[in-house]
Image 1 (cartoon, rainbow, N blue to C red):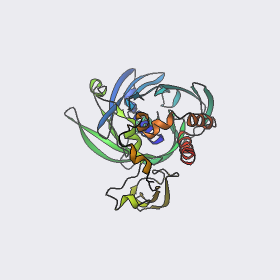
Image 2: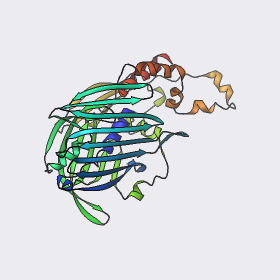
Image 3: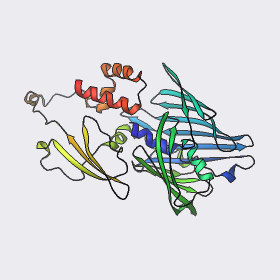
Image 4: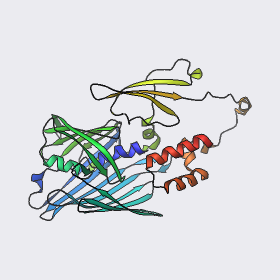
Length: 368
């Protein structure tokens, strides 16, 4: 689930990148992007930017239409970001609603420290993050990069604080090339910027004036600049199970004698980062080799238990199974009272969402 949200965060702030000349005097502008997963529309992003002598105010709204079976699990993220005239973060206020659960995050810069407060039902915590010259926030990184005038070959590394996840990650970026795109029948000259963090990679096509026309990630997510009416048109909600499976390792050809094979070793290439493939009790990374092109070869072992024949069940051919046990595994487990109690107990320790998910998964595997 963490990979899903990291990919979505890539798309949330990609469009907030208007170059310095646009902020002269007083004005405002509005931009829309449609977001897709493997070609299917799943949401949109709207950003409204206002600027004047006192600084810049950016209002962003992100909506993803997601469902799991018949349950609506749509995600809405709203953020207001205030920048000083020199494009430094002053404060931000963020409200996100995921599957009906709300969380509010408010932050304010004091010197070189970001003081923020996270609130949700039964949770209220304050934290401080120190920002250095090598540290940026996800809402201001791209806007500062574009304002410095992009050049092919430009690259760098820095620590990036992601406001929606309250998470610090290592980011690498590089301006790869210039490329001409077609938008509404006109040619648009853009720079192609590659970003990498936490095993994920995105490519952004941004124009000289800071307009983002396209973005794609290595996990199948894409965003395109669209008119408001087009961006907001979503015919059908995307199912949660179809995007959760994006982290699973699958063979690209049939496995010989699959019923008798319980120990498989995969050699996967190219892999953009040693952290891109998760490791837990179900799959173990044996070896990671770095190549000359900067990519990696990952050797992965996956073991499965042989299926046991239940001869008593053969007599129940005409018995209809309870529908609630035919749902996705995650749906059945999430309603388990013991697992719910464990989740509440573990989350009190302030662990990251990814670590919390792994701990719960391991407990389920060992005990249930």
